[in-house]
Structures are given as C-alpha cells and as structure tokens.
Amino acid sequence: MSYGHVKSGDRINLQTLREELKVDTTYALVKTDKMEVIRMALPKGKTVEQHSVDSEISALCLKGKILFHIDSKAETLIKDDWLYLKEGQPFSYSVKEDTILLITIVFGN
Image 1 (cartoon, rainbow, N blue to C red):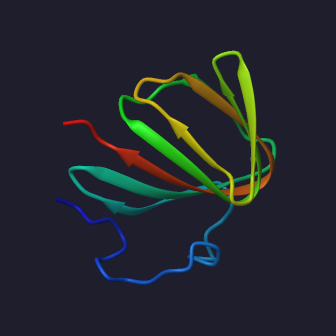
Image 2: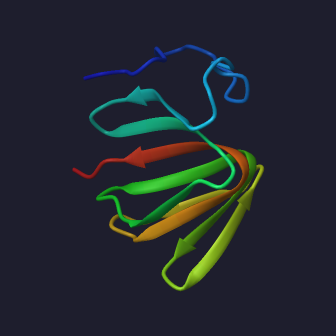
C-alpha cells in the first residue's frame, strides 16, 4: 500500500503546498487501496476531452474557475465549489482561470 507524499497525521496547506511546482502539476497526496487524493494545478486555457473513470470522483475547487461538461450539462466551479461524479460518468473540462482542484477518487471493491 502506497501512501503518496503525505503521511498519516501530517498537516498541510493545500493553497501553498509546494509553491515551487509549476501550474499544470498533478501532485498525489495519498494513495491507498481504497482511495487516492490528488492536488491538481491547472493553467488557464487547458482542456481535457471527454473521458470517464471507473471510480467515484469528487472535485473541490480551491482556487480559480473551471467549466465541467457532464452529459449535456455545464457546471462552473469556483473557489469552494464541490462536484461529485459517479463511477463511469463521462466528463470533460476547460480551465477558465488558473485553478487548483482537490480530487478524491474512491476505488470500488
């Protein structure tokens, strides 16, 4: 079982974590058999084509503005907005401002 870069009981600040990392950086905080938590810093203008993940996902916007396309619906996330995607849910996104997301992936049994 891998625990990523953060150990159990560590306190971190998600806004200032690894400030030397460039925008467009994915940083795995924790990964276990049951979940993965990732901090994603995404640059304005980045787009990701429609895809899906075989796990439940949540995205918490810590900073910025990002537009998710889910089915025929568009959802804009700004600071403190949270989004849940069920297992296998197709989605795409486009980044409207430099954005930091906290992504949690919960693996099935």
